Image (tube, rainbow, N blue to C red; front, side, top):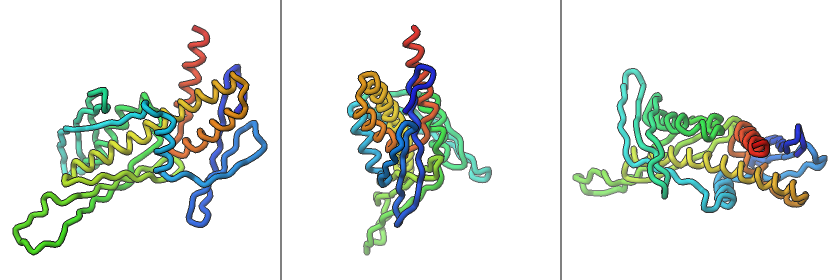
Length: 246
């Protein structure tokens, strides 16, 4: 952490090492000569940390209806749907295109939210797996139409770390939508948590509380395992500077 042009800057450097089949992280700030190490948090631990930071501000999204058109020969799909925020209602209409249903929805949600949450520009969809759980039965007339299907979506950030989101339901399309929404939701909330912790660090610095600065910088170093937040933090700095000069 350092002062530059009258503003507080946080610089976090992450180095990844694969040790004994576990990712490890070494984090260092520009003002500290001491380097501390910790095992990289699991995806679930990152989700819980984000929830702990945001509390009631944690956002949940939903998509209940969609329209899909697909050209199988051309390998293109177009989806139109309504994105809603749980507890607040509809947000905006989503239109996405891709090589398939999931790709189109992922692209549509990203493009609709990336201006507000720039970290979404640093993640991409890499794979998905669909599996069905069909119980054995002697009934030849059983269609298994109500058998649960699991859709597993894999999203990668710019460091190459993969995040897995899944949903299980009798509807493959319903599970696909839910898995994509969970993925986008995870990274939106992670960015909100990063910005909130950043304000905590600023406040702790103003109050001359180096103990809290160190604590919150450690929290920030863990949250940035999710994605890249340079644009989001720069935007927050510019906004804060604008308020100070208003």
